[in-house]
Amino acid sequence: MQGLVDSHCHLDFKHFDKDRAEVIERARSSGIELMINSGVDLATNRKTLELARNHDFIRPTLGLSPNGLERLKPADVKMVLDHIQEHAGEIVGVGEAGLDYYRCLEPSLRRRQVEVFSQVIELARSLDLPLIIHARDTEEEAFGMVKDLDKVVFHCYSGNLDTMKKIVDRGFYVSIATVVCRSVPHQAVARQVPLERLLIETDSPFLSPRRGRNEPSFVLDSVRLISRLRSMDPAELARATRENARRIFGL
Image (tube, rainbow, N blue to C red):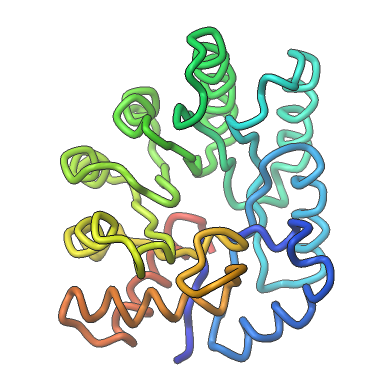
């Protein structure tokens, strides 16, 4: 199958240090046309830019994950945001960034996530770039914070159907990760996202549909499953999600 897009992966992560070139080649051989690689902090943002400079089929987004913010001082956050702004001409989006309350139970740390996410939102607004959102147990709150933006992707969406409908009604995009292959709740969402608002991703090296490490070529597993769930041709799903990715990321 040709013309696939993995709309969110982390090829720069250490999980690929031993065989990154082979992983990229498998993705290309599997028909993947584009991979969107997303940074999560200063180090991965730098590596993401390097990957994109070396491969014209890898496009970068630079972000600041909510996870690990307790280790960052305000000056560290500013350094990340300044780096993103400095390289705005090279990137196709800002993120991933957002809110993650799954393991963060301390109210003060949750407030810090909101504070930093607000700064990232304003940066995406000022740069007029899509914002790629990481939201875990926070989908409704994150939507409330970004609903006045124009270009938003809820990456690796795991929220409920009601919030999903608000997101797509607002004109935003919902990205379904390969975890859909082993998660009934994700399958329920994948059936109902309007086709013109649907993206597919691996979030590799995480959320593999198979055993072990995930990788971009496994996005094929999602295409096959979601097309069955939606009673449509896999090639048509690949085409639609490719066009959606090109539209939101300006490619």
